[in-house]
View 1: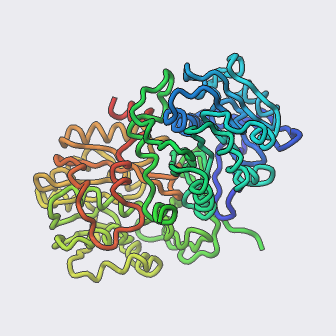
View 2: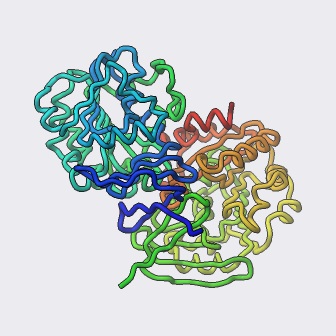
View 3: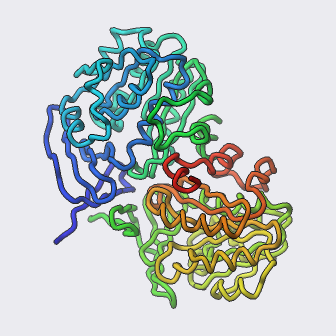
Length: 276
Length: 276
């Protein structure tokens, strides 16, 4: 039998492929081409417009790092907004905090939610939690309508291609920071240090204009391009305020106190480029 | 014109491909299939038996981390052995220390040395340094003949496939540790935490039997499988002894004091597996 491979062409000079056992979903939604594959080593894998979004095997590092770094930094986070994140992985982590009263997920594509509930059971179907509030809509309008509202905002989005490009813009960062409560913290999916240096630099400059303690941090995720992904922390509260806080139950895959600190260490060439 | 891609099949479930501009070398040496490609983003790339060994763009992180961690830990390293490393990248880093009197490179394949001198000029042709001593031979016999000889040993090898498999064995680690001076330190190329967990665990157990302060550490290298590679530090001297030492001139690509510490932080699932 011939082999099936899922190949991702996000960068014109670099490709990554996962071996496929079978295709589970192949659907053109209102917004994007949505596929779910069962892969050989990484388990079920969600693919949007040809780009790997998450796999069962290595998504937890991503979700722990994009959520807990801002969640731990802020004192008693009560209201949380997740932009994108229709798969539910970030929502699961946010709801681990008993202080959380409401977690709004602003996801454009209902089909991402539907298929993820079925094919990523490890997320524990967080949507049934009464504190979860799914809004199937674009985040821009929602952010505009809700200034000064959230303790934590997590921008858990696809890559800056097509409709997601706006989520990496100056305008988005402005709206996001405006929607934070004083002292609140945001974290955004912010690309690959080796490949996307100049985009990250631009976003860092924006974040510096908008907040007192922006910082870039990194997580090792083998199925992302270059084997990892970074996040921009944007806040007037230093990320290190979260360092010695106890974790809520269930945080046990990637994050630990040493990794918390280590995530903010950057390779020298990149540190120099970003921080000068 | 059709596109050329270099695809690596090291793991049966995961592939990575680099876009090729042209093939520079394609030679069956006495020991292996040696290729050099000019790639679009990563520059010249050395490939042995189909496996990417190094690229001009991202090799420096690897070479800084495999060499400086043990070099800094040991007080005034004078005699250094590099096992493999015929490309010269580790040798370049080792020779940055003015304390070094002799750096022996035990490389089986003279052709790796020859082609690397031509296609990786950034290594600065370290072979012309009078302290460099290239031995074209197998490392096992050499280690056996030289007990208690080296301040630092660096095992800079290919993956544990074919002839390199022995370099990941109990026997090799025994010989390597025996060839160290008291208090000397070794670092070995030691695979991918997400993919090769059980091999790493075995090597860690061996290292624990042979030394008082073994530790696993990691570097982000986008063109390696899963985007990074780990190293086993094996020594009776703690790695942290090197933490606040000044770097020799020229160490400025990947390593910095925060990255030095961060490299030893391990994702929680892997830390639990390795250290229990």
